[in-house]
Length: 370
Ligand SMILES: *Cc1c(COP(=O)(O)O)cnc(C)c1O
Image 1 (cartoon, rainbow, N blue to C red):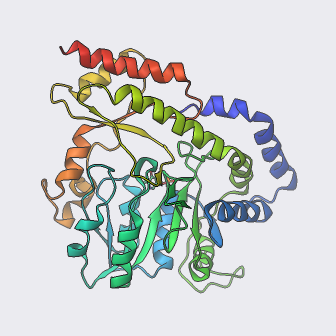
Image 2 (image 1 turned 30 degrees about the vertical axis):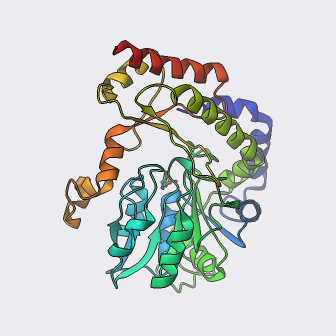
């Protein structure tokens, strides 16, 4: 699904230089590397502040805590996302309240949100799934009406734009992941909270180092959740290439769309006007009931073409959430999506020939059904 080795080879000198610089100065925990990278990311996203943390999951968790979310509270989010989004809510002692998705974008549907907001609701986490921005304006207007915080889950969407503005800068806080398979990946785990709110960034900075500003003086129950200096140095080097890489992903997406979009029963995602995706994953919907997803996947596997289902089961139906009381049928669009989606290889270094080969393999399979 990605080509991390090829990418490393293409920027080997820069990465090796960054790593060796850190090994020489031995400032491994926070320090200048992290500060510099935080400044670069804030500038990139268009926010005033940025705080590096240990993962995207921690970014969500600490951002929620910094927004005052705690036991007994409710947080609205989508059931069609990676579990980390709701995990962060549960780890604050709060309860995830799911709202179904818009079938055209796979993102939370703001028109279905209002009826789910109770007096216990404190925040909303829209997820920019696969890299496509969620429809933020109506979400913000609901949030303002009910005095809710909005935290963007940008784990898959670094570099994506909503109406000309970078995701992460649109709401109270944006949470980034530097997991290797994301648009900007490090060589391990890493994450970040970007925000215009100095109180949120200060609180995250305290939470990530045991709840204090000064060593050995603690004012909040904290965590050990820092972005490694080594990862920050690597990420600084890689950030210079992010826009180029995202454009390569967009070029590959456009080619996939033109080739797969004309196959009967394959539905490609069309981004709404003025929503610019980061194209982290390339996902189609299989609408022809004769196209059995597992059979198509075997056909692709047989040709050495990797493919994945992001995600095979909506969060409201996960065993871990059985106590939340949801049941099959509660979020029909999310359930239809989990049954129909298929993701194909997507990374910057994917060549035009490779995209054509993948599309041809899908076409051969569908045509073979007669
Ligand atoms: C990857 C991901 C996360 C979590 O990021 P980690 O860095 O792996 O903890 C959160 N939300 C979404 C939507 C993701 O895809």
